[in-house]
Image 1 (cartoon, rainbow, N blue to C red):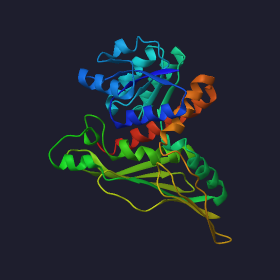
Image 2 (image 1 turned 180 degrees about the vertical axis):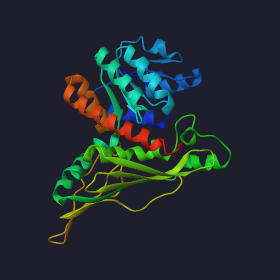
Image 3 (image 1 turned 180 degrees about the horizontal axis):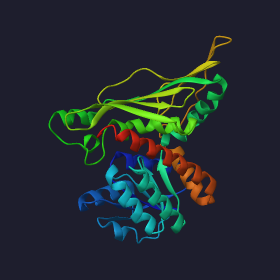
Image 4 (image 1 turned 90 degrees about the horizontal axis):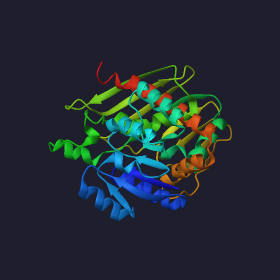
Length: 320
């Protein structure tokens, strides 16, 4: 299997490294807007060809395209790739509105290709353990998930620069960059909430530097904290009537602690994982393509639909 990439940032290099670890696909070509950027990235990562015209690259006979362009360009790039009859692996968020995702999924069905949204944290062995252990804690009554990570780009913003991750033009901010991780996790575990609200902490440039997202599941509430301007050190936690489970981080999960309320015992459940944890989502995507697994595809797409619906509702709080 061969593939091409759109984007030349560190995340693209991480994906290439992850795919190399699977041993199931080979990088064929890369695209970048500048000639120097495309050529140097291709040379560094072992691609045979490089392009500064996306349409030219899409004429190649590759199986899929990995997209890691700025958020606001995802929709345009995905549509082009689908029309070229190639499968798509796109970094989150795949779409910014429900309408965009409906167009994407409809076109993908017409062209008989898969469109996959990258959520590395939802395909790791430790996430599977975490998700399955939730069944042991009885009726869930409270959940707090967080991704609060101080961004080095925030320092650049304070110096007067305009990094994409803090740009309204490129749909940056805490919610779309980091909040989507715990949001997608909550939706993967509990489904669509009955209601939600978002309380952003706005920066002077009109972008949310941090925020609190509240998902109402009627019998319990999920509180999601996200920030690019502070650093958290506390774990995430799900409390049930029969026990409590905590994880050290949303992505990657390296520690899982399960507390049994009845016998008052604490159990450590995490297993060793690949340091390059994108390998698990890459493996799942490649396997889905090679097996033509429509069931797995529809499950992932349904999750993406609920996530983008929640994101769009939450983003309205940024510009009421």
